[in-house]
Length: 284
Image (cartoon, rainbow, N blue to C red; front, top):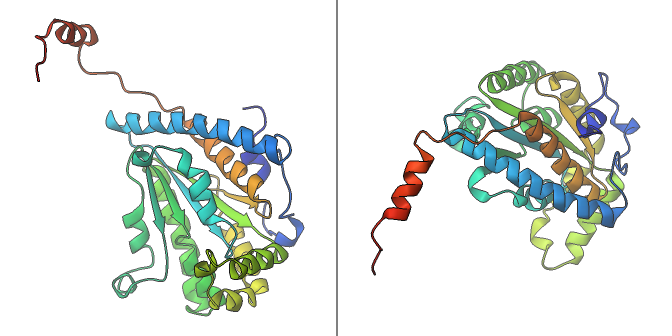
């Protein structure tokens, strides 16, 4: 691929200032809205082909898999990415986990316990709709954990992600960068549409009131947990058509670089073909 979107959207070196990054940007987009949607559809088909190879590679004993981590403020489009981007891939090759408020059982364990259980198996494209990062975002903003605990969690996350990488997991960590103005329009749209009103909750406005604190928390996450083996990508999310293309392109570049290979059969192809040709007619 000529232009690397991964290079273009990789989180800048610390200290990150989200205010300097345009949430309406269309970095390296192949054209206008219609053109980009057409390209996204074609690239989605290519991603599906490569994912099928990765799935087949695991059937031959391969350990490699890809984990897409989606983080962002409410309405930034995590669900939309799952629907429009990941939906292009064969379902048997995908595992999606949406992390909500921890259950009583999960609270009895370390914060990474439930995350480890959701790591995709070999050959899979795994998706985390929210993730272990909630424990250093909400935990910090809502003061659900002490500063010392939050600091330890940053280190635990970096160590955990390195372990995943060592075990054949390629992480694609995406922060969907949304503007407060665009979030306001999307929340109003939910309130005005009876078919989408169920998605709204008054707590959405409580979190919105904490926007500056969340932005600072995300900046710290990008500063502290973007590494060479598990970098963060900041995807402008105000334009849905660009957001969907960009995340799909990040995945495509990633899986294309992995270059998954179909396993060679352990049996003689010609022999099995002859058996099929020479078999007795099958009767009903």
